[in-house]
Image (cartoon, rainbow over all chains, first blue to last red; front, top):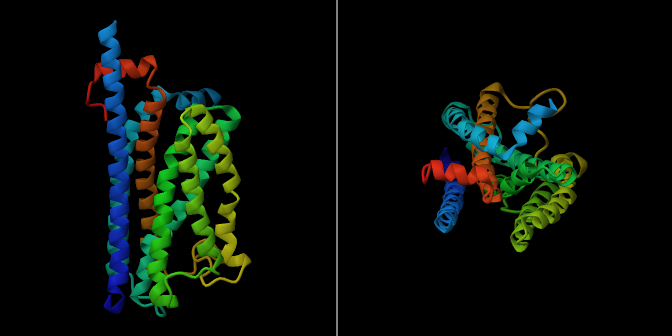
Length: 48
Length: 251
């Protein structure tokens, strides 16, 4: 890559990081929503 | 046809269908990106003018393309939701916005990193392509902030849909900016009269990267839409039954 190596590799690494952040945030939100509903369903179930 | 569309748009049906689709999108996307990245970094020859710096296009072009595609998906979902009041369409629009913002950010940063050695500057305010892409990032931020500011989901859907539709005018401006105005940014390379202006040794890895990014974006979008559907349908019977039948392992 010569003199451009730092530019090229930083772009590829940044892209990988963005993909990982997107995946992590999507999973995190999914887990939060699922757990909130699970708690709500259990509370409602206990009242019935 | 309408029956099929209605069935697809049914939240429980979509929720289950998307769960089966995500692994296929993710695995095929990773394979395409692995080939595209390897061929783009190690097999494609250096450009005769830009040298190895041209290899940045293998992440910059797919990111820029996805930044616009995400907006088109968001605006289309918002429009369908607004006109036909389809709940799933609003969920798609809401799920596409954060992803669009991330890919717009990526397109701007990788473009800036490419601009430093090629143009001698990180940023040029007078350039229409750069500025219109930055405006799109602000439109995504505005859309996300507006949704976050309104507690009522139905009201948030309507208000944000209007913003998404108004902002859609920026998409053709970004695409044609390099033809309409004098720009530092190079003209179209792939979609142009007379075919792509790039050698096939450089073109195939780029097409693989575009395909791979699109598939991975699809996997991310489906995961986000599933979550959005789950949240919106949290008080419904099918969600309650699903939670009770598979506690903790339906992710």
